Amino acid sequence: MNEPRFPIDLVVTADDFDVGEVSTLLASSAECGYINYHAALSQAARTAIESGLTSKGKCLWLLADICSMALKPDSIHNPFQPYAVIEGKRSAIPEDFSAQDIEFFESALGKILDVRLNARLADILWLLKKPRQISHALSAIDCYSQFSLDHDSLLKDGKQAFERAIRLSLMIGKAASQYIDSIRAKLLDTFNSSSYDEGYRTLWLAEILLLISIEEQKSKDIAGKLEALSVQAKVEGDFYKSRQFLEGALDWHKRLQDENQTHRLTVAIAETWVSEAEIRAAESNMVAGSFYESAIKEYRKIPTKNRSALGVDNRIHDLHQKMNTANQLALGEMEMIEMPGIDISDSVEASRKHVSKRSFPEVLIALANIHSCAKVDDIRDEAEEGLKHSVFEQLCTSTHLTRDGRVARRSLGLYPGNHEDAEYSQMIWQHMLQRYNQRIELVTQACILPALQATNLEHRITEKQIFELCGLSHVVPHGRELLWAKGIYAGFENDFIASTHLLIPQIEHFVRMRLKHAKAKTSTLNSEGIETENGLSTLLDIPEAEQILGKDLLFEFKALLTDSTGPNLRNEVAHGLIEADSARSLYAIYSWWLALRLLINSIPWKRPVAQDKEPEAHQEVEKK
Image 1: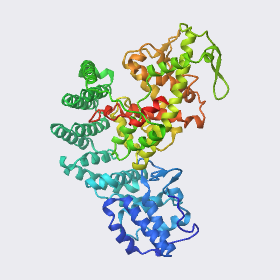
Image 2 (image 1 turned 180 degrees about the vertical axis):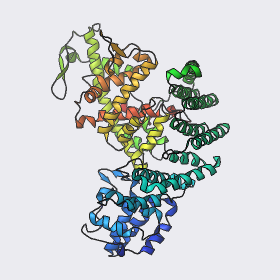
Image 3 (image 1 turned 60 degrees about the horizontal axis):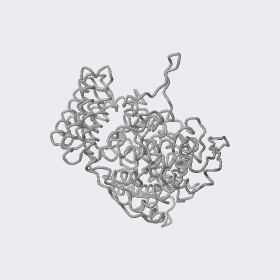
């Protein structure tokens, strides 16, 4: 990436490379898609330049670059993104190409009889050539619509290609009407002939068709076929696949604005979770409890006004009881695991090994559980023990300042041994915060960052993958999946400034929703009858918070997010006080990891997340 490859001012045309050679090169990589085109072309480019054929090498490099870009068809103005970004370097994007490069692309368009390459050439010309030429967009549409619709093609580049063709056609309008009609007919014919045995192909085709106007009866037929396939999957015991098809059918009924069918399918999706929970209870009550919670989450998507006719509230009540019973039984399934501790240097290496050589999403489960989180009782015991042996700290007053010099809190000294008053409790709290902050710094450097680096080294985590996981999580409310996904994904991009600003408000919303669902009061009504939602600091102080969140998580939220003498990330972000260094600090990185942990550990995996314990080397980190 960004490697010097040829003279910047070197001008080339399509006459500078062998069309037949490139055609043969691409033909051998056609089954594998654009990424293999890039690999083949870039290798040929290096060989050409090493042989002194600089002009030929540049031609091949330019073709390789346009094949390396990742297509994001839902973006109108920026559909091509770098395939990789690592340590400040990235692969090619459209803005890298000069005016001479664009002229080369225009001279090369159509010379090679390969629809993938010509689609990319035409699309790049449509984006970059000034003034724009409709012919370039039409060429791109024509080439994209020639992609295969078989299962493997859709899985690689085909789905994005057809989506891009449709969006370009809709953007252009009348001039592309013949293409949109042809694409619609091709997709419908392929959809109608697809079968259950072809995996998710039918669902993918239905998702593409959602982008095009389809007459009402055909839309109902599409929804009906997807629902029928979901029934077949459920009969075979594949509840995940059944839900995927049901959600596809649900999207079509939403498009038809058919509320009755939408709510009916929502109930059906919820009941797949119930059925799976009942089956999985024999293996793990922990998993069963998670599935019941997923069912409840699904039922809550039905508006309150429509619940009575469907018996939703009664069903939610029943499922709550089933979930509570399963969770109580799950306690008996857990086993205590004690591990010997080792020093920090070993912990860094252990962190890398802990996530290494794992497949996705297992690697995320390992990363999310790389550390066991704070135990408030242990921290309090350590603080009391430390204060007991420090008479100096008990006698002296202390003043806590913010980064910009404001006094956040003052602590008065007290007579040693006086442990009954509020001042002693406040002093203990301050010592707990100090120990917690030290632990965060240590854990983030010794455990989280090494594990994150190892994960990024072995895996290409995508926003789409995270988005799909958010849809499965119990902590992510419906409608918040994209915000959580972008925040979590930003961390994998090492963009902790973005993750901090995205995730901390979502954590606050998570707390508020948990309290609301437990019937706790989360708002304030003033004398004029105006009701205002309380902020996170107030929410964490209500009596029900400890029971609902658990005392350990409650402590972490207070210490990390709202206490004025700690990182205070929530208030710093909410009031616009946070600076860049704080937004990407060790505390900010830890808050990202904590959000990842909440997400991952709330997903009903096929095996309990508790089995993925932190590596042995981390136990000693807690004591450092």
